[in-house]
Image (cartoon, rainbow, N blue to C red):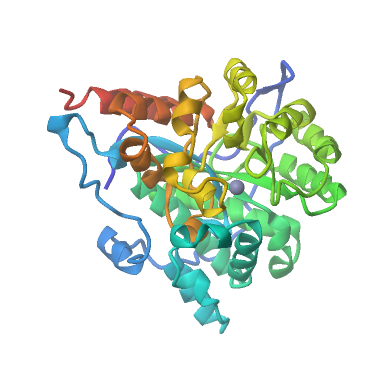
Length: 413
Ligand SMILES: [Zn+2]
């Protein structure tokens, strides 16, 4: 278990917190979730061994057996980190998905449950395979209890991997039909994020993401909804994003939605530079004025763009396993993590969709060490970048940063 000392998830009611938008402080709206009073939908907390048993087919709860203090290789589970790019349905474990599919009598494609995602032949990877499997998983989410379970699992598993701040991304319109509308769908997610934060000693905020495949007017509706719940505490909406196939839709058409979100005080984190290259990252910077970029990995071919990202302190949410799973790079060795790091672009290593890519966030740090040769000092810097890239309240970030310093000082050679 990672040490949780010094980190306290707050149960404080959502309040007004100033945040600068275009240099002007913006006060968040007061919102209350007090009218939501739904019986807690979960089983009691499970022990690590129970979890490990349940999730035998995923990489969670792994003790870092490669940690070797004598060689200066510290335990990466103990390294405090922020997880800034993970999607709601994609956060599920395969075993949880199997459980939900069997409860709802839904047949799952064996490709989703039996095939290791990173061992799919390169010519069979790509967006369409991903979307088909993601949609299949989403069909298994049919009740409020399912929604709560997914949020709780994400918080619990990430906490076990040393994540102190999780900003989980949701597109509430996908779940509006089962909850009777956009507002109740989002409110259930926020309520559970708040409760799971307390339960698992992690700060869970929610990023509302519009889909590039939906009409831009829908994105505006979502932005208005997101602003109503804006905050920087667990159980609030902490940002506004834009997801789905980067090649769909016209980025500029989403600018009005992003303006609504920005005027409401929300940080902005659209996907860009995953399936398209530097030109689209540049367009996204110019049109949507993001706080962070979801992915951004394909900036690596453009030194001027890397300089700009570094100069403007725009964190890129790099998801190496996802890049390989989507066929953006043929294998992990080719993910340009080292190049982007050495260009001084802040990086938040993330898992994107563990359900579809078979790995969670801590494995991304392991790979940085094992595949890309990151030293403990450099891994600590990656963790700092992730915490600094978080948009949650300083009182969640400051203790994590202090603990990263301690991690780095501990047992050093
Ligand atoms: Zn994503």
